[in-house]
Length: 90
Image (cartoon, rainbow, N blue to C red; front, side, top):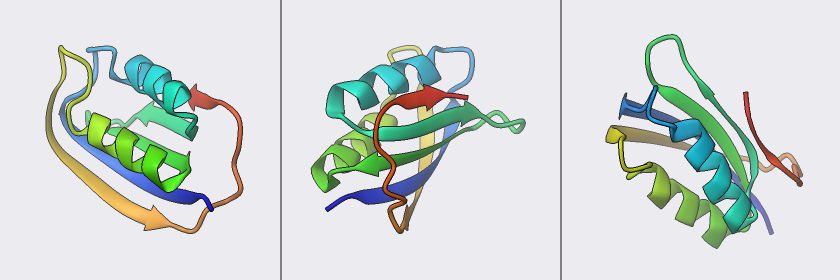
């Protein structure tokens, strides 16, 4: 059974290779979805996969890559869309 979550990550998360790092981590965990920068300086993502994999990616999002300084991660659980396959940077 898959789960889906919408994330908004705030802090120093743009210009620190956050999206590319999240893509690598999502692929390692087998999580599908996407990540993109927002005009307000935050990063937004939707992730879908096995519950333990999605939870692991959310935990990673709270840390991010070494240069990031995450101050907040908003998590909204959603109904899964049946998305499978790659995780993409938009």
